[in-house]
Image (cartoon, rainbow, N blue to C red; front, side):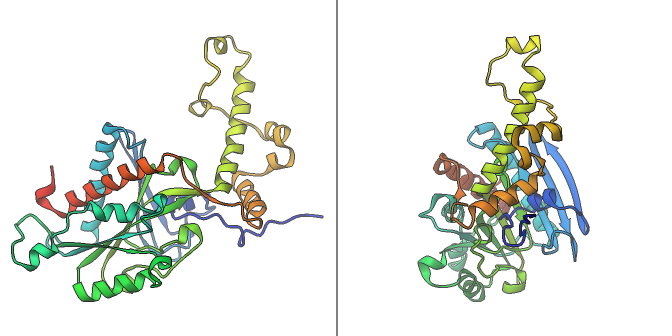
Length: 341
């Protein structure tokens, strides 16, 4: 009796367009360009109508980097992020004196979800100064809110934001939120910027009303960082790493040069290839599945019993402090001429 996996019911959760591109069998309606700046990878994607990813048309910029707790990496990412946000604002015709509303989505009492509120806390707001007529040249009118989550307020987040927009009348909105990814390697090491808005909570299967130009009638730029992954992803990646470890040991363990190395060699840095026979020998029938099929199978096993948890790294408190500081600094530099170095 053949067992079939229902891909619809057990689809993996992700907010990253780059995840969707990597797992898609088609790139119809997708334009992609990849650039490198030092050790930072910048992927510029433009999606057109009826694209294969079934996502809204618009610009999606993904910045992948090393640990920003290192000062040098922090400064490099800051420079790239500032440049990419500036370029996107130019593409959608945002002017130097347009008023901005920064929205920090999320629950500040839950560390992986506190990115947005922490960015707001460090943003340079000037609207109150403008209202009394003392705003110096070189500073843009900027206001900011952290609307919390529906479980705290009882109010749909998009309704709160729309009400503020109608009252304050900003020219554009920048929304900051924590995201989910299908890759362990991208957690806390990736920033996505898009002009298509955002669905709060979509990455953890708790989708709320979208915050977008169609809803607010003004441009909406969304900036997000994946801070969590499914337990499914961790298990699937572990299996994939096990394949690579097995292939590495098989190829190198009997070579004389391996006697001069330590046992904890990082095999991910090696050009290791494994064949279907090795995979089947290691894990039987599961070894015959491709990477996406393995993830779907694990999701099918864990989800019904409630064990497909959202997982975040143990050092998340420290990292979120750094990442929120990074985004706030870049926004301040982009929005205010006099803040730029």
